[in-house]
Image 1: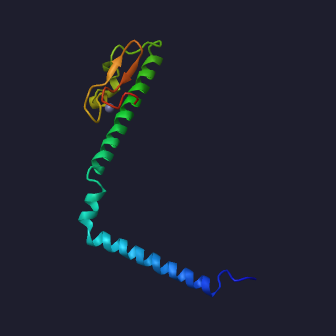
Image 2: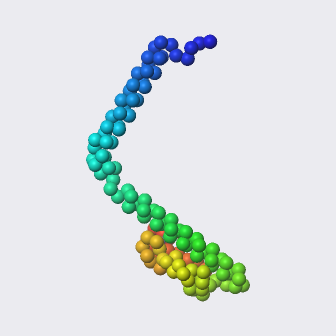
Image 3: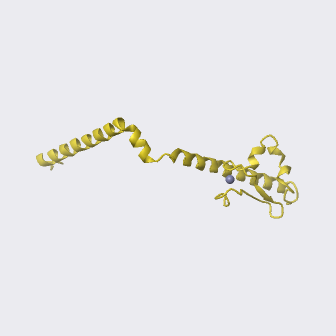
Length: 126
Ligand SMILES: [Zn+2]
């Protein structure tokens, strides 16, 4: 059986190992010695943006929940749409569900079509 590495191969593998170790060491040193420069160059508004996205998810969940309630209302009301979102009595204790979690705009409801939408920019397709 042929050995996996000859003497030269072993030397090359060893050299790569040393290079990788040095690279990791440099990265670690850079991270610990220049933590301030490092974080500011990455971008300061990253947490803010991911927070916005998280609130967008809440908006999406609100709308999904309201739509399910509208469907439930229709089932028990001969397929009629609720005349207003106030009819969805299960949200009496959580009125904030009828507002966008990002902008705080009240959701628009069309009793004709039974569709509920968020007027916040970018939330039109939620
Ligand atoms: Zn929204």
